Image (tube, rainbow, N blue to C red):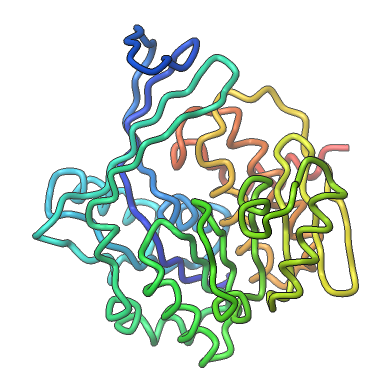
Length: 305
């Protein structure tokens, strides 16, 4: 079982299903409502645990009902939550999500306690980071905490997976400490200033990121699959054809699955195939953490001819 440390955001998702997104100033009647665990960090941690990883989660939640509910959920998912801090000064993070009839989503996040995750929080988890196979990071927490996590991981020879979401400028110092960067099409374009309209554009942008110091890049392209790029290699991995219901959290499932497969010693291209299958299952269900599949489901899908 691979050891994975996920350092990132913890939210509660409030999701409304609707036929279409409202226009500015418009009120529309939606359909079903659900409340579930969210936050890119928590989503990736839950995905990694369900898919077979031994996961430590480093995060902050508020000292409120949302935080209490989140912690109970993480324990139920077998996460090590010794480094999830209850913050008494700010509320837990919340995401307001609309999902339309085409399974596309629109999300507004109130970060709450996530904004207070600090380098000191990371330092307190140094022993767990040192013992890990991979550290998984995203950008829904302050950049100083992300930078410290990559620095601590490098000090102990632990490989870093950075999911650069939501899209933001990333210093080369951080990229040089990353074993793997996993942007989607839009994030890749934002990071490089280059168009990523197709696989050829994704390859050119990935090369630009490799030139900045990251060792491998996986560009996720939704229904077009993923591009896997290293200094001496380039491969396309096809997407699984499914009927999408909700794409919320699909990228997080992908990243959690990728960390598990790599921690088990799989080659990168094989790990991407595993992650693609996991995210394909996730988009057929509503919610983020609620949609993450179990390991046996992914293995069964991969076994299909």
